[in-house]
Length: 290
Image (cartoon, rainbow, N blue to C red):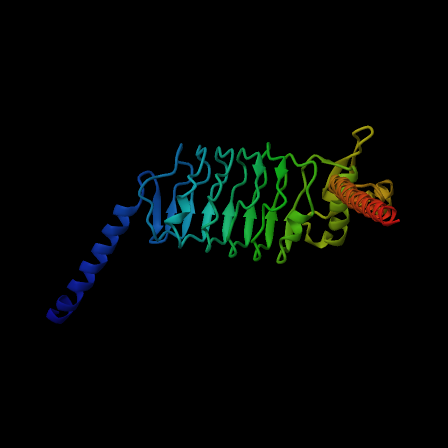
């Protein structure tokens, strides 16, 4: 009995100290079911909670009213692997906010009020496997380099937003992509959509709802049609049409050619003028000798 008391006392003291430490570091109005989890779900928060433990790995902040995330928020939480900000009031992501989340595996920004995903938003989040951006009713723009660096991303959700088009370079940045959700967006079946449609044809196995689950509106009458009834020939009128980039290249090339032609003409005229002066000088010298 004495031996048990002697050995148990240090253990109980350590356990008590640890439990007190956990309770002390847990933000008010939140639960901390284990040492690495902070659960602040549905607490009516209007800002990020204070005193989040630095070694937190799972941070649950869904179903609140949080309007923004400071750009340096993740700098201190280098162990964070799971971040749930679903169903808040986020309208934008500050530049660099997610650029330091090198261990983040799961990120849920769905059901917010985001309007745009700018270039370089996710920086060096090379460990990110699942990214949820669906159900943002005002999200109508995803920049070409928005997902640059997400080399491990396997699941991307962009369903039920306000996207009418999407540059396929956005998707070509994702070599590990296995699942993508794009249904429920107001896609427009114009020539800008043609390249995305061809990509979807080749990658239909990555669409959980298939082409049948996606619709687009026809440019003429706005009628909604399923992508499953379209084919490559549906966009044959777009073949040979130049994109804005193509036009800029043509214009720039034309300007360069014009500049080169002007410079060449100037040197040619200068050379002819010099030759004529030299010839005139020699003729004068010959007449003087005679």
